[in-house]
Length: 481
RNA sequence: GGCGCUAUCGUCUAGGGGUUAGGACGGAAGAUUCUCAAUCUUCAAACCCGGGUUCGAUUCCCGGUAGCGCUACCA
Image (cartoon, rainbow, N blue to C red; front, side, top):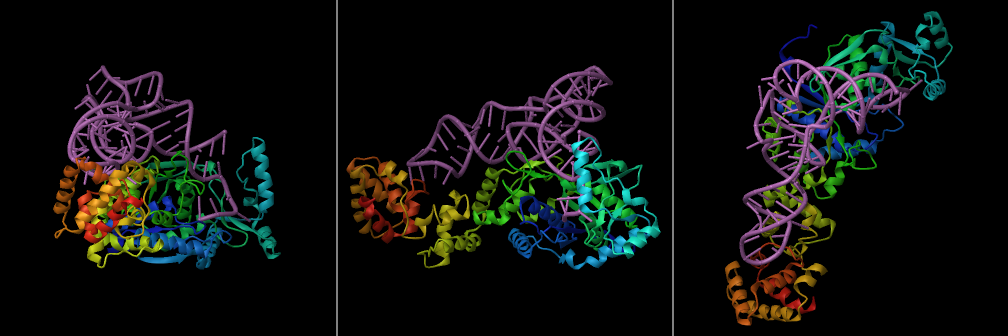
């Protein structure tokens, strides 16, 4: 290899999804790893859409994938390229391979092959393609093609020897060539298969690292052969273990492999999702550090931290990352995301300034698990129309005398000149002493009246936040609850 | 079926020829008191099995088992 020079060390990575489905967790993680690696080493990330399966690819899926990537905050430097627009490249390559003797025309029909495979599977035969067309004399091939007979192009796999590559994660992986069949490169309709198009593109786009799911490990020797046949140097292969569902089977459409957008809709913050995803199959040098921002993720990311065994997607831990993130995130930053949730439920906050909204967000966010909480669980902090949790009312307001005392308490508050966290507490405690009841009784009841919930931040902080007028009004309604 | 890969608490994982096998999520218990889904403290919880190699294997090697992947004119 006599490659030129100076920029030879800039890594070039790619994320190459197939638009036959949405961007799911596994794909998102692969994209994330590629992104982290590229950013860590100052390399380039290329987005390439592998839409050679014309039947199953749709533009909606392409759009969905882009939306997912954007939500995750993954940006790319080149592309998206579409393989469907690069067909000539693959056809030329296939042609070259035939000419160099690395590939040959195959006239077998799909039906024929399927029948044979079914037979082999039923009996004990070898299901591999038996290379029937490999030895057809060139003149005959020419004649049949001239006569218009449809033909696919197959790669001529060496009949002995072995093929290996050194994976950056798994180490050396070797396959006996006899295990590999003469796979199709170009279908009879001149559309390339995956193996041809990836390799041709990865060479053409000068990829230095192929970072992808371990489901491709067994496919890699075929691709290695293609690189060799095409006279191109091998990139670094790094296969990443798969993400499994809670039942330890592969994530599929049926369970778990939901679109990443579903997590957005569930109120997951993208940064938290990224952090969680990054730690699925990768560990930073200091494994005790789990909560990390993008900067740290990028700084620390390296192939050496990638695990070899599959990981189970743990929803509970995702939620934990989400609440950790929200707690650490300044309320003003969270506000735009929260506003989206409000919009969804037609909630128009009564706060008159963003500062006031942010203050309230700060008050409740330590208890938030996801963004939706701000529009559901914490609704009473932003809106006067909120439901009262029946269980909470049952627990803390079942006693009529408590309700009546709360109404009386409201009147006391109404006449206070100052209305602060300290003053509201003093008023309530004095009042409870006067009535000879435990302060907790009134506090818990007031909490339900004020927030509709049995769970909330410190009551007096809530009162101060709500303000005198609202506190009084809500307390007044205690008998109606 | 064949081939490939993998195997540490329930889950994510650290570690590595001699360790009390570490951390995190989740779980349990306690503390705090004004509720907890907050906070703090404590606890339970793992080296798949069998052979080697070795003074000594959870760690290295081999076999088994299990899981996953690939085995298409899908990607």
